[in-house]
Image (cartoon, rainbow, N blue to C red; front, side):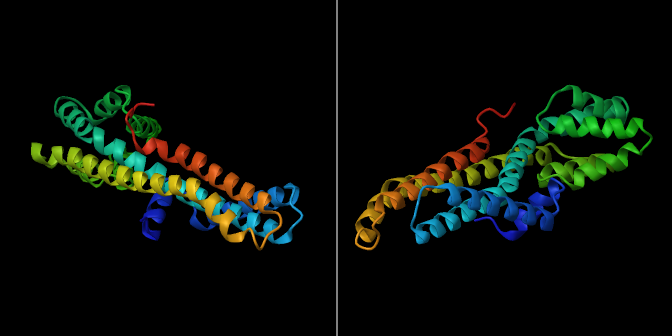
Length: 243
């Protein structure tokens, strides 16, 4: 399970202000819930309140965890290409300048990382110290191995081949952990989609007259949860890392 520290780390990586993001997601959730529950054709107030709360929880969960999902994907991709990128940087800087090494990484079109080095080159051309810019990029990296490797290269420390290959091991561990979490959540969603309408029909039919509306609400909610979460989490499989 993701912790608050994991979420905060993802927010810092993308430069998201935690308080402002919470305020924005809460406002969006309230507006969405109010609009849907107001215009949904249900006369029973209890059912409307239930729908209102379900949509708020759903929106909040999806919006708050989306940066973490994207952060995890970046972590995996950067770890996957870390060995190649660090090797390229080490080789080019050995025979040429740091600027040419950054230019080589940018032109290699590595997912995510090439765009970072493009921004570093632009800042370097504008007069900023290229080493300082790259160090600030290294500090913000989600991949610990790539971060430490890049910082070591900037400090002109020697890195052994074994240390480079740690990036592959890190990528594999991240991939295994993420796919395990996704499979667990998908199993829960499938169980909810199958059993919830049945359980609700049997258990609350004696209490609610508008049982059809209740089942419809829950079915729509579960369907939306499944579709949206599948869409958000699909990138974590990363069978095709290049976009």
